[in-house]
Amino acid sequence: MSLKLLIVKTSSMGDVVHALPVISDILRHHVGAQIDWLVEAPYAAIPQMHPGVRRVLPLQWRKWRRALLSRKTWTAMGALRDELRQAGYDRVLDLQGLLKSALWARQAGASVLGYDADSAREPAAAWFYRHTARVDKALQAVQRCRELAALHLRYSAPTSAPDFGIRAPAATWAPRGGDYAVLIPNASRASKHWPERHWVALGNRLMERGMTPVVLWGAPDEQSLAENIAASCEGDVPPFLKVGEMAAVLAGARQVVGLDTGFTHLAAALGRPTLGIYCDHDPGLAGITGPGRVASIGGKGQVPSRGEVLALLNAQLGR
Picture 1: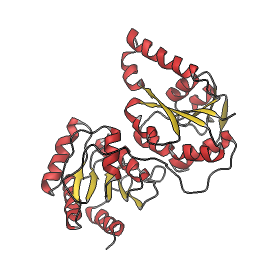
Picture 2: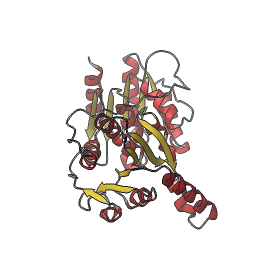
Picture 3: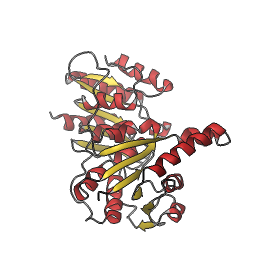
Picture 4: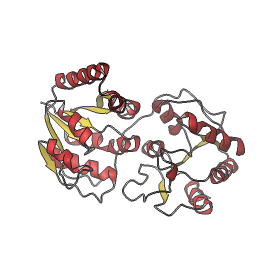
């Protein structure tokens, strides 16, 4: 009988991307396994891009927690709980290690597997697991997920390069003609930002190399920055795009340069040459990872200079 498994990795976008190779690993060792994924609704398009994921169950916890006294909220949570229970999973693997993920994992009514208290991001999460395993916190995020799955599902810890296994959907928007590169200058925290003038310099360098700079944005307050950068380097700015639509744009790019944010990690997972700029923490545990040419630069208290990033971009593009 094939394994029927629920993966719990709900957020954020970069963390969801980092968990994707687990699906490829499991299917190599448990042929025919039926794998579902519980994820925050805005990121549902990411596991949907992996052909090994049978079904994606959208969770709206970020919305629900703002209205926990509402009957509508409890009705919606109850419906998701019923859907999880009716699926009849053999096991649930919580790759997140947070109290919220552990509590939702328990709702499926199956044996829950997760990190032990010394390994979980929130140690109290381990109280809700039937079985726990210790995984070194110093490992890179992708490898941590892969090792946890291997320990619980009884196969050797993978040593091969991670196989993200995703395929972008068909594009709904394309820049004006020719080759293009993608710039991702926005992030969830201001401390991650890199100066606007540096992005303009990158855009101009890409134009010199025959690529139209496409500057991405995801929220209304980010659109003006994207438009300012594009206007200064003859670039292009897409309309608002959902995650799957954005993935299609990333998949067609010759080069991607972005901050430490979910779309940059997604570009690398799609195999695009990707350069990640880190301004507020070190990339060691969550550096840019993917099957193409990837690199990370900067770190906590080490905002990279324009010259350093341009030199690394030249190396990626090839002189």
